[in-house]
Image (cartoon, rainbow, N blue to C red; front, side, top):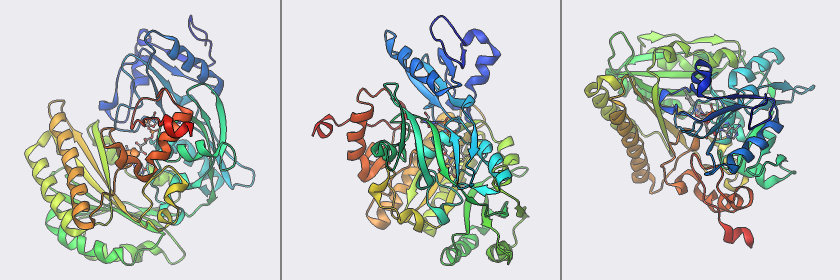
Length: 466
Ligand SMILES: Cc1cc2nc3c(=O)[nH]c(=O)nc-3n(C[C@H](O)[C@H](O)[C@H](O)COP(=O)(O)OP(=O)(O)OC[C@H]3O[C@@H](n4cnc5c(N)ncnc54)[C@H](O)[C@@H]3O)c2cc1C
């Protein structure tokens, strides 16, 4: 499309487009919506450099935000008065002839990827939900159900194509422009727009057993006993989430177990779930589904009724200590009791093997957390605008509590990760030991901090010159 200011193949949308503009603003969290001057939807990689040039040439220069799937619960993929480069039209997925890799464009969501993988009977190390974008998920590290078997999603990227702030379109891999390849695997949105990822593929490990086992809150200690026993026996074929939620119609504190089990000939899930079933869950929807596309849709009914005002914060944690989990349970129960408008706030603990994460040295990619760990995501939801501040404050205090417990138990900080950060976390705790190297590479690839949203890295010019 040609307009008075840009000649690109893609689409240019402004407020004057009415509904079409409003549609482009949609994000997974309504709190992530801002009103940009232009939404630009490139259709070719060559559309992007002129957009960046145009933004820089304005007085003052326009902010540029990049949107992948729009699932991050921050405003990093949105802009107030600037430009949003919305990658939605760059969402193609192509399987290599030998089915060992998949080329995925940077605006795809996991549904695009899993639909193609389903037909080819392959899997990739990707996200658990269909609506999450590959772009944000992969550049932030990517914890996947396959992580216990195959590491983080970034450990399974073979190559990428990146558009830098100066408009260069650069192909990168372990052998081509390797420093950029290092930086985009865990450095977030700080180095450029990744328009293409080449992901390792492997024969499908399906079917998978997924679903919900729910227990009244009064059972939490018994559930956690089984969880602690399970921690010493689980294998890389399974993982589970422990969540705190208040599901309808009663809205009482409920602890749920959300398993993911890659089945084998022996029907592995029946063994894995047996101790949890012996506790007598009040709800048990667990069943086998054929592939990751079906897995990624398995919680659709829950998301459909959740209020759209969502803030997620996560924290890494060295272990899932029962007293820490119970401490947060008490805080969460009280908060959701006292704030009915925020009662849909949930806490999700991820319990999955981290040996493969820890097998990769800390300096191999930009992702810092390479000692065994788990993570927690506090998902604050609010039914009204009025209760957003109190919900935000709970989400922050809950992650601080987990951080403090981790320090008490280990004497160290486990830190944060970009995919569940909000941008105000101390940068040294988001990038850990890799921060100095990231600063050096920021000076090389984005010295003027053109990429100014998110967990922003200050360039280190001194190191870059030496
Ligand atoms: C319900 C839910 C469950 C989740 N579960 C997990 C999980 O299990 N494991 C996990 O690791 N994460 C998980 N996440 C977090 C998710 O990975 C991040 O929110 C991720 O940023 C979403 O990617 P996106 O492309 O949809 O994000 P967007 O909101 O579009 O973008 C997020 C950030 O990434 C940048 N970005 C997006 N695309 C590109 C690109 N192509 N090139 C450069 N920068 C880009 C944006 O500029 C922005 O800064 C979950 C999120 C939700 C909402």
